[in-house]
Image (cartoon, rainbow, N blue to C red):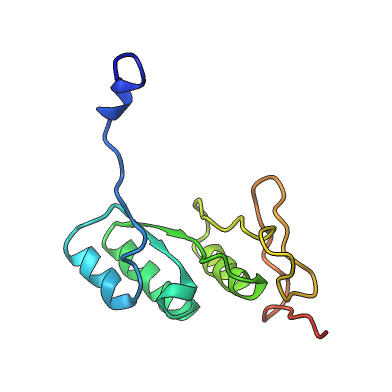
Length: 130
């Protein structure tokens, strides 16, 4: 529409692949096809944190960005995704879902502060014993 940000529509935009990134093989196919500028990697969807890290490494080698996100996981899945995101050493990720669930199984729930999550200290996910 006239006068409603039309000039912004003419600016180049990055293309992100989200739903198609459901495995290492799918990520490799997207990278080989040069189909995206950014891959949205959800560790719970692709097979866990180690597979997510493999995708991150291959995307970096191809010059493709990565955003780590979740599938509205409990604190267990969110902690795993948070650790993957922290391993990247920066970037913007879609992990601010800690307050969505009433209970997330963690002894100390993750909390979003100023748009950020802190990586829990120590190994594991700090599951609630109860």
